Amino acid sequence: MHIITRLILGGAQENTLYNCEDLLGEHADEVLLVTGPAEGPEGDLFERARRHQVPIEIVPDLCRAIGPLADLRSARRLTEIVQRFQPDVVHTHSSKAGILGRAVAWNEKVPAVIHTIHGLAFHPYERWWKNAIYIRAERWAARRCDRIISVADAMTKQALAQKIGRAEQYITIHSGMEVEPFLACDQFRKTTRQRLGIADNEVVVMKVARLFEWKGHEDVIQAAKLLASDAPSIRFVFVGGGTWRDRLERQIAQAGLANRFIFTGLVPSGEIPSLLSASDIVVHASYREGLARVLPQSLIAGRPVISYDVDGAREVVLPDRTGCLLAPHDIVGLARSIEELARDAPRRTRFGRTGQSLFQDLFRHEVMTRKIREVYAETLASKSERSRSTSKE
Image (tube, rainbow, N blue to C red; front, side):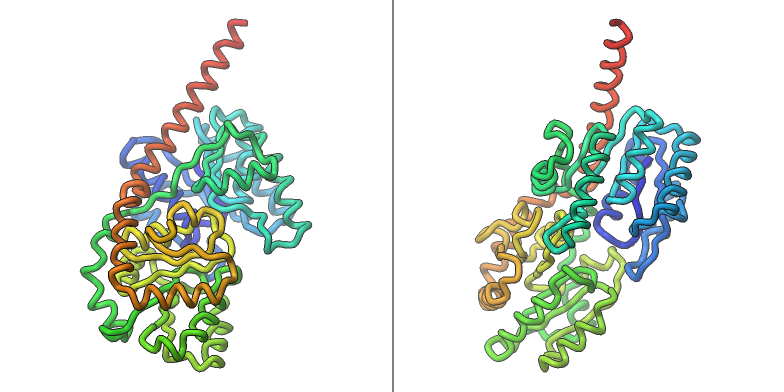
């Protein structure tokens, strides 16, 4: 039984859905995916889940916002589902579902309780008192699960630094994806660039992320201002939807860069490979992220990446091998890196090919699911052995 707060169009959600699909299709396991409503502008994955016949149960009160009454109702509903489904494993994702789900599963004595950290709720850009609440809640929840899976080593280090769980609880398993569409995406390059109105001689810098705070779109706009006169052949493409679109478009217009930026709006995840094919450089300027899926996706597609050095980025963005790693808010460095890569096509090709060779197998969803299922099996076997030893005593 997987539990996640929202089945929106996002990395953690795609990861979880791939895991459910593989457990059902490749391993013939019995699976139930429990989630709250998909509220917000991000889109959702319910249709894909139905298409792949993943059983889903919606808990109406399960949502991101803290609400004592709604959270209590969610806990009661989760308890009812656990008692009915009788899972061998409860695997939780995201902060709210992770805390409520682990508490319920532990209380109901589910044989194996697993949690995945896709990204941590506490971070330097959050208010101190909220960080304090999140950290205390995560410490409490870590005592109510057997194993903790991190999508990047950085997540483990940050959690342990705040005394969340024990080192032996943690294992890193990278977030899985469908690799082949990214390996084969160049077949769409010409038609996608034509559709977007991009000329053959233009260098495309692409950013794939929700149009929202902490995603760094404003930094890309500032970097584009610095490049406006020196690199007129560079075009910028923002892929994704979100509540900040009007705000970003106003900033672009005020900077006189309206003809340099293209917004695609919200797109299904299946369109990301063809959009990446139109790019020459991918920029990831988010201030916080577990390990953004767009980084390995871009590299598997053969595109060099420029990223801020946050969370798990340095585990795939290898300086002078797959891309450029910068300090957060280094707008001058961002502009310089874009300009240098834009002028050096052989370097772009070399970075992209290195990324493909290093990461195309590591990030396959089948590999992810196999490793996760091994964690399930090891946990169940270990607890069964301890139970037998206790009963003999």
